[in-house]
Length: 108
Ligand code: SF4
Figure (cartoon, rainbow, N blue to C red):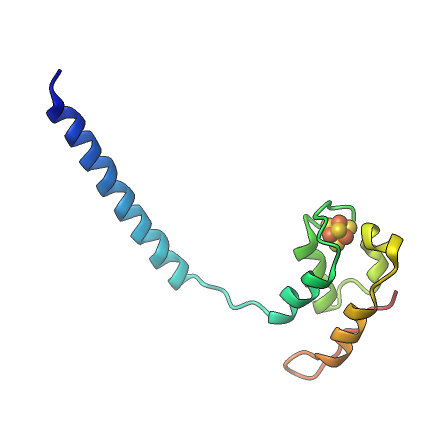
């Protein structure tokens, strides 16, 4: 068995992994999209079941819709609807308007 083939294979795959890793880091820096920090805060206040019953692929999508005002009722979240504890979301969005001052405050 020629161990040189194994060594070359190891070196080539390691080099390829290092180059692709650097490219991924550069792509992350170049194409980074700034997201409204309120989305993450509202997402923390949702049940985080990520079940999709609200019609969004997960709680992040629902949080984004609540923040941008495209969803007007917190009860769109079927999991949280049972507990009916959406008050923190409503209070948070009432006290944290958009950059232009617009408030999208959902109802229960
Ligand atoms: S229904 Fe509620 S728990 Fe399920 S994904 Fe939507 S926001 Fe998350």
